[in-house]
Image (cartoon, rainbow, N blue to C red; front, side, top):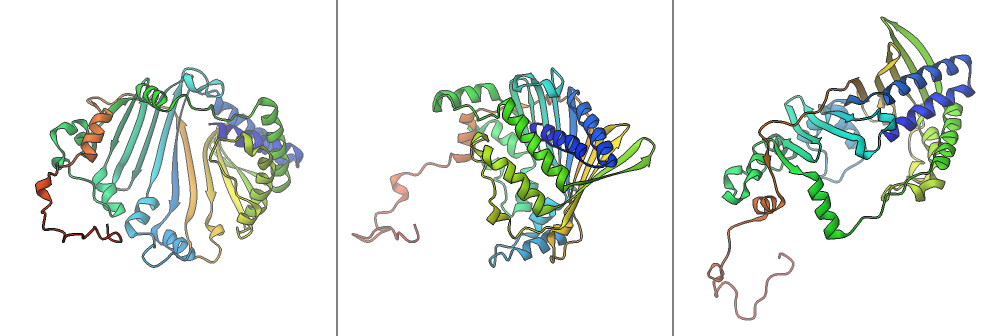
Length: 353
């Protein structure tokens, strides 16, 4: 949500430095992002718009080691995957803090159906996944639920694709008691945020060209086009001085990392329906340069949010069951190791052990 707000502020404000058309596009995007922020429930779907042949062409260009090529099953999984996400808050999203969000749902699916789904309602988190399909696609079959011991409990439901639940608040509390109170994540203060957004707006205004086109029936398209490497390099140049205030583990690419990135122009198409942001489409195929990529893009579809609900019949999963279900195995006694298995003085072969 923070990233979306920053993108909206940057795109909307930066256009004011350009032509009348830039200014008009900026105002329209500004209003569209403002409307998103005033909603209490929001849903969107993210789709990697590509195909197996394009993914394999990209993989081949990266020159993987023999045997490390992307598997057919993985390419099929990625090419057809979609992620649906819904969030619900007690307040307008733009005013919401972490404690204001009361519901969240995320679902990953492809042409074979739903692959995994996760919901958070109040204190509880709910989970289900199609481990058989995921295992087949990744070439690593899932364990058979019938092979688990009776103590596994709800873990069997997990492997069978049924809903299970666990108390997320209790798990967080237990983790805090075990590891101690975590250090608070670094946050950008209001003054630094304002400075950053201003700097990013100047970069976008300088490098991005906006264009508007009507589509009829209340639909309008606003396109933003920019040279990829130039835009990313300059944006990162403005962000790096603030790196110490970013969340831990977020390493920014260096100019050296980006020197081989293509500088082809990339276009993002924002679709507005009656003034509200309905979709964002980005065509990335040109970034593949000489790879034989015909289809490579990102599509984001927004819609009126539906209230996330708790699934019926979910069994409670606790950590003890999880450990017993996945890591417990038949015990082994001394009798399982014959005394004549190893010659006197012989040790385990370390290179094979």
